[in-house]
Length: 81
Image (cartoon, rainbow, N blue to C red; front, side, top):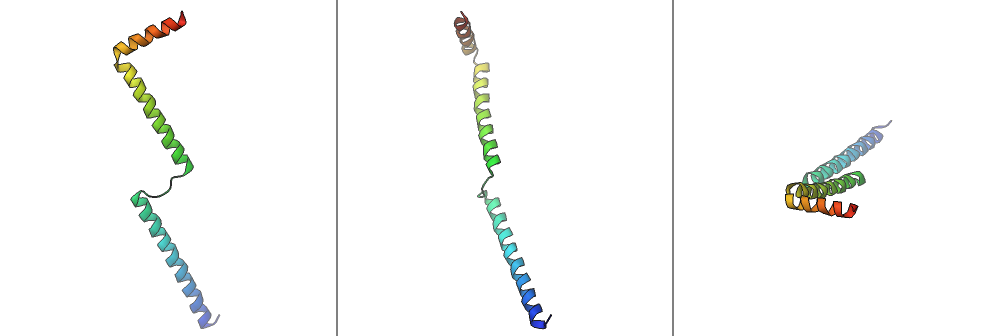
């Protein structure tokens, strides 16, 4: 290998390394800003969590509202008859 071939190879390696470092920094900055894309699985899990929170809110409202609970029990009994 000649001297100039070695210089070109080292230059190419340095360029690739610099480009990868820039890409890594850009991805780190996006993640720090909270601006990166979630995967499909993360979106699905977020939807499930939101649905569960809504269900829990309904159950809490039913459990804490005694009058509503009694009315609900009467309605269920009326539907059975």
